[in-house]
Amino acid sequence: MSNERQQRAARAEQMRKEREKADRKQRNLITVAIVVVVIALIAVGAWGIKAASDDNKVETKLTVPKDVTKDYGIVYNQEAATGTAPAADAPKPVKVVLYEDFLCPGCGALEETAGPFLAGAVESGEIELEYRPFSFLLRQSTNEYSQRAWNAAVCVYNEAGAKAFEEYHDILFANQPQEGGPGPDDAALIDFAKQAGVTGIDSCIKKQTFARWIDDAREKGQKDGVSGTPTIRIDGKDVSGADNTIATVADIQKAIDAAKKK
Image 1: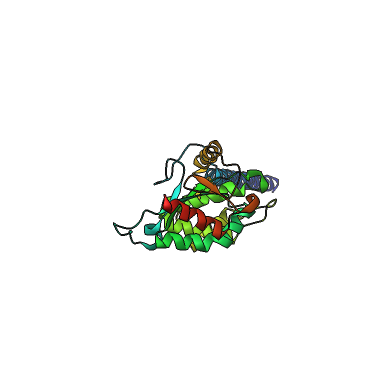
Image 2: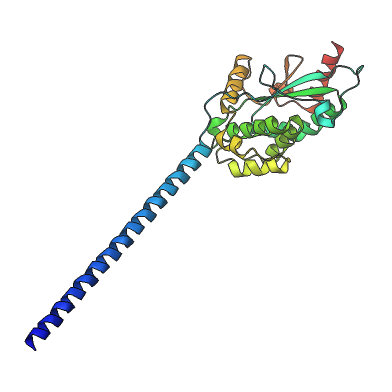
């Protein structure tokens, strides 16, 4: 009987050891599985962070938009506005150059008072507008809105042309923020583009594809004597109101009429 008990005890001990071995093996498998999952999650997280970083990394190389002038201008003319080219014998439109910053309160005021007049003069063929970026209020918002807004507007132009740019231009001024705080973020700028009928430019807006070109445009404007916005030039001359106030419709029309006589 003593020998039988010893045999049973030996079998029990063997079974206990086998269970412990199986338990260790299962724990090891679970540990390996957890480590694999953690490594996978870290890899996915790192990829997501890198992808987000890449998607929002500001472009540093120079990218020039399509169909801009050598003076960094975006031309909005009768054909762009109406879809119809002017008659062959139509008078040549007067060139109106407009330097703007989308954060500039004076530019917003000019858009409100003279915007409809200028748009009508373009549609009639009396003038053509040449918009030139002058984002000099970089530090007047907490997210460099004047630069980002101009980049977004150029993204719209590069994708869909001058008519879409003009619509986006008007939307930006209709939603102009105050100086000193944050301007609309990238999501808002993308939504504004959709309101203008333009999609597919999310990356262009987030990466600020045309930032370098806009910087160059500002420097060129400064070399050409522009010190602030809005600056309106007609027939090569700056146009302003009395005592260097913002030009009124009457001031602009007078300068247009003078240019026509030449």
